[in-house]
Image 1: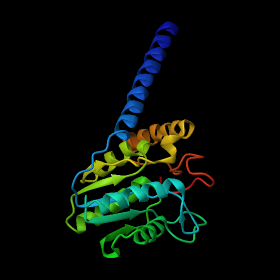
Image 2 (image 1 turned 135 degrees about the horizontal axis):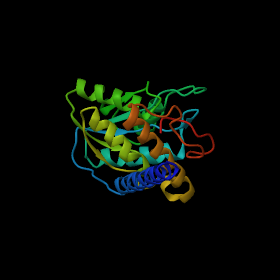
Image 3 (image 1 turned 30 degrees about the vertical axis):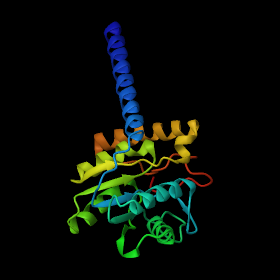
Length: 215
């Protein structure tokens, strides 16, 4: 009996290791691929902001999304992200002001400012786009975040393509990239098993100095 239990335990450990290795490969593979193409909208996933100023992670996402809009890949820019505890404004409002200051037509901006997690924001974005007859979108976030973003968006009925942020501070720092990958492995597991996400959407240290936001 003990020998059988040991074999079962080893088999389970090997299986878990293989699943984890494959999921890690998929996270990094998706994050390395830019799928941009003409679409109905460009959606930026929110991240931390400090008293109206986008954090380095959020600013990198916004800069990339604004460039995509200026290049004409989509006519609409969608900003996401609600208010975190202690915030005086929302991530979406900060993103909107940042985009307008860089030349985006305010009439071409949509935003959802209630979501405090990736899942909440993407469900709200899907409703927002469906109401306007938009069925496809380019999604902008950090490379390690892209796999989960695209999976949720597609599960919500959208045709989704990823354009990861090429200047992400997370992707340039091996330690932060590792933390973000581990975070995504757990978040993907929660989503696949329970259709939910982590209560704390941003791994500690992802967006110094105060890691918070709907990343």
